[in-house]
Image (cartoon, rainbow over all chains, first blue to last red; front, side, top):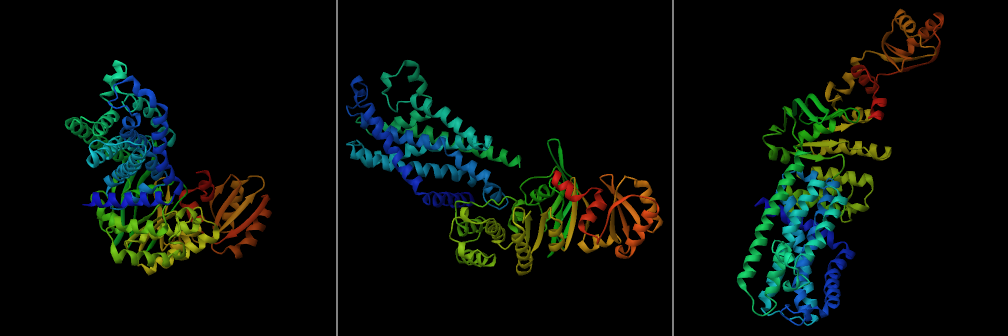
Length: 257
Length: 317
C-alpha cells in the first residue's frame, strides 16, 4: 500500500538525517539516563511513605521513566514538521503523488521509534542499577510498547498543533505548558495513595498515567494483566484518534496554500 | 497538441484578487515564460497548475489531464521546481533525488541509474553524497531542477529559476535550461520577473499583470508589434503638450509620458530620425534635458500593453 510504503520512505529520511548529527544521538541516549539516575537518587527515601509496592524506589521509577521519556519526546515531535513546512519540503512532496497521510504519519512513527530505542537504553541502565522486572522479557516488551503508545498519542497532538500554528515559539510554549503538569498529575514519581484525593481522580484521565500504570504493573509482583491490557488499549485508541486529528489539520493546512 | 491549456483562472486570497481571469496555452515541446513583476500572479498560476492549490473559477489541463479532477495523473506527468527549493537540506543530494524518485513510483536499478545520470547532467555529481546544507546557491538550484526531472516528466514548471543567483550563475542556468529542454524533450513553463530571461529562454511568453495575461506571443513578434524604435525625450520644463505636437510634426508617434517629464514616442528608424527631432524641438523652444533612442525591448512591450514601467513596478512590489 502506498501509505505504508511512503511512510517508510519518510521515516528513513528522518532517521538518516538524525544519524548524521552525533550530538543528537548522544543527547537522545544520555537524556533518559539522566532522568533515571537523578530522580532515582533525589527521591530515594520517599518509599518510606509506603504504598510503592517495593522498597526500591528505582524499581518503582524505571518503568515510569520509559513512559515519561516517550511523553516528553512526543511533545517536541511537531518541531520537525514545522521545519519541513518552513523549508517547503512538504510543499515539494504535495506536488508529487506522495501519500498525504504518510507525510503526517511518518512524523509520528519516527517519534515512536525514537521512544522505543530510548526505552531499551533506560531498561538496560535500570538493570545496571539493580532493577528486576517480575514478568521478564514479556514485561520489558510491554514497557516499551507503553512508552511508544504514550509517545504516539501525544505526537499526534503535537503534529496537529504544529500544523495549526506553524510557529516554533508556539510549539515550545505548548510543550512546556502540558509537559510538567501532566507529569505531576500522574503516578510517575509518587505512589497513588500518597497523592491528594483530587489528583488521584484527575490522574485517571491522564493518558500519561495510563502508560505508567501498564508499564509499572509488569515490574512489581501481583501483575494485573487486565489492567495492562485495558490501559494499552486506551492508549492505542487515543493514538488513532490523535493521528486522525493530525491528518485532518494537515488537510486544513493544504487548503491554506 | 497543447501541453498546458489554461482558461479563465480566478483566485482570491482574502482581499487580494491574485488571479483575475488568466488564460494561455503552451504547445508541446516549447519553452514558455510567464513574465511579470512580483505579485502579478505568476506563482499562483503555477501553484494551481501543479495541483498545490485550487482556483476559485476557471479550468486548466496539463499534459491532457484536468488539474482538479485528475490530480495524481497531473502529478506524475509534471516536474515542479518551486521558487523556494523544498530540498531537505539535512539530507544529501543523492538521498533527496532517490526519495523524490520513490514517491514518484520509481525504484531499484532504474532509479539509481537515473539519479546518477541527473547528477551528472546538472553537474553536481561530485557533491552528490554531501549534505545539501553545504551547497552553494547555484548547486542547490541545480539539485532542485534534478529533483523536478527525476521521473522523466513531460512538463517541467520552473518558478523563478534564477532569483537569488548572481549574474554569472544566472547565465549558466539559462544555458542549463536550454540544454535540458532539448536533452529531455520537455515542455517548460517558467516564471520570471527578469525581462532578459524571458527574452533569452522563451520560445513564447505571456506578460502577466495584476492577475491577467495582457499579451502572448514570441519575443520577436511582441517587439515587432511595437513598430519601430522608442525615442525617450526628457523635458526640462514639462511642456508635454508642445513636445508631443512637435514630435507628431516630424512623423514620430508619441505614446506615453513617464514621471510627467519623459515623452516616449515611436519612430521607424531611430538613428535617422534623431537629428530632425532634436532640431525641431529646439526650433519650437521646448527645453530638452536628454534624448535617447532604443531598439524595442520587452521593457517597451510591457510599457506599451500595461501603461506602466516594468522596472519601477517590480521594485515597488
